[in-house]
Image (cartoon, rainbow, N blue to C red):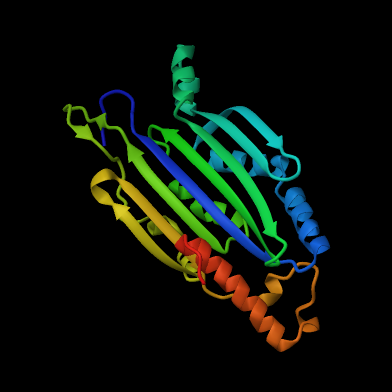
Amino acid sequence: MRLYGFNNLTKSLSFNIYDVCYAKSAREQQDYITYIDQQYNSERLTKILVELTEMIGAHVINVSKQDYDPQGASVVLLLADESRLCSPQPELVAGHLDKSHVTVHTYPEFHPETSIATFRVDIDVATCGEITPLQTLDYLIGCFDSDIITMDYRVRGFTRDISGEKLFIDHHITSIQNYIDKATLSRYDAIDINVYQSNIFHTKMLIKEVDLKNYLFNTDVYEIPPTTRLAITNSLRQEMIEIFSGRNVY
């Protein structure tokens, strides 16, 4: 595809995961929050985003990161296309930054009456030009323990080819799932809600199998009576279904 001038398309990916855990006592719940804050502090999140930036062929201009009290972290990276960095006109690079960035925010939480702790991560990638964030999905999914995943992808604006014809998208896509490894997809139930005429794509994924031993924090599954195991598994599944569907189940 030969374009007239710079590729002006803006491509935005919002990647959101939830990790669910069972922590019965107040001490276990607080220990879980502490573990999440240590495991996904701003330093590690920055490393994840820097790796993501390299995968999409962009260059990090600036990093802003923050760990919050009592919990949570945020990281913001400003990006530029490598070709822009070589430009003799600095204002072009500055102008590029307002549409190219990567952000991450974490939200660990729990409710003492349910014994369910839920960790949420929001990652937003906005790029301008030929860079597309879709190729990073397998990497992002692998970076987190993801029970529920929601993804939104949108291509905005237009660019022109050398004949002057407007191009509202510069790559083929029918579903975000096209960009996720089949082995990963096989572990999830997935649905799409796409608006093709507006180049808007939405995918939700819910883990199929709930192996209780992977969801207990500081507790041995074999120390729990079978009937209690079933009740805990059902509570975990209900939490996942509610998050996946966006409504409470009674």
